[in-house]
Length: 333
Image (cartoon, rainbow, N blue to C red; front, side, top):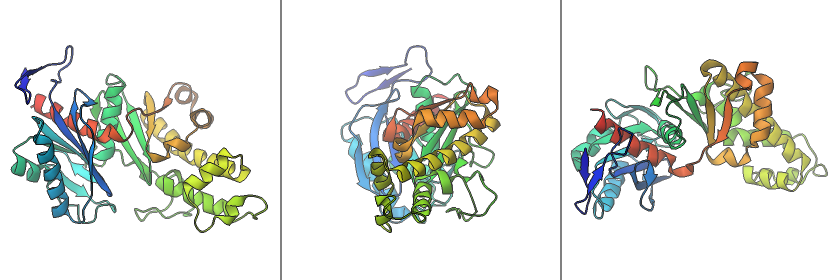
């Protein structure tokens, strides 16, 4: 199979794979910004363009179409992959589950609209799923029975890849791992409206809540963090830990226990080859400590074998995954 490039050259099938080397545009659609780049063979081949995410579904679609048009000035695009927050029906390309970061986005027929306006094959995917797909294939782990990618950010997202394919669940909500229940005490209300979800403890917002709870019990002479309320941030706690503050170290230790609790539950359910950890909170993870906590809480066959690894693609994972998925969807038709 060959694909013509902008200059008229033929793009050949990658040796030993079923995915052709063709340019696809990957778009990561988040609550604050849209980021886009051309992807070929699982790698970025252009600089990333970013624009602020506007308010309202119609305006967001306009921005997506504008990004596509910008890239088409210099590149022949075979398809468009869109990684978006929210639950996505991949067959229809409709956003069927809401996200607080994108008010009014639920119900948007993003695939249908973009294809009608651009005449380009389009694939819409949950952003955590797209990132997971990219990480697994970048690491060459498409032959593993199960690989789980955990995004530790303001919330907790997850992507499940089994035998090289995304597991999306019966109702397209597979991988909503942030809403695993990790306590029965009704101590923390999650953003989903339920109590004691993993996200309420192991996310960035959960880290901050833990920090405030711990600091509320100490005096200024015990830690300078007591003087940082109510303007405390996760970065302030991290900086204090780097300087040897014992209270900051205690906060990070508790947070590691919270994260490990969710990983253990998932590992016992799925027995994955490994976990990839990504997202803005990954910088706080001590992987040796996390591994020790995981082993202590797991059945031996799980603890001794399941790996916990840092992801490698960073913020580009969603774009790469979405673009790869649209190419795969064209090849497998």
